[in-house]
Length: 72
Image 1 (cartoon, one colour):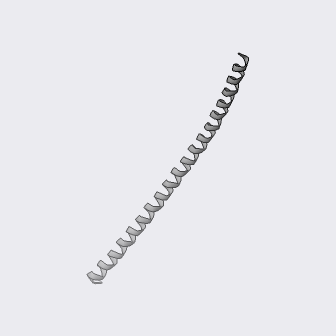
Image 2: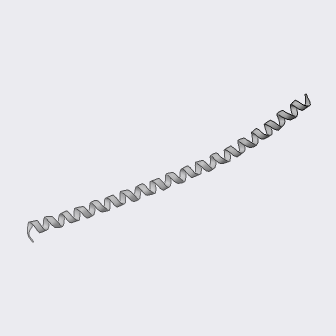
Image 3: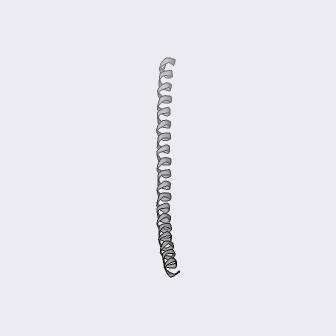
């Protein structure tokens, strides 16, 4: 095997390794993005639940305030 053929094969192997590494990095980024997205969805869900609770408290507070004003 001559040196130029060997160098050519080594170059092909290195390009393949680089391609595989790029694919793996992209897959890791996709997984990380999915994880962050799921985390944001959980937070959004919790915030929506908290908002409903707060709206209920405000509604009850307004009703009590109205009753107190009428009682006075």
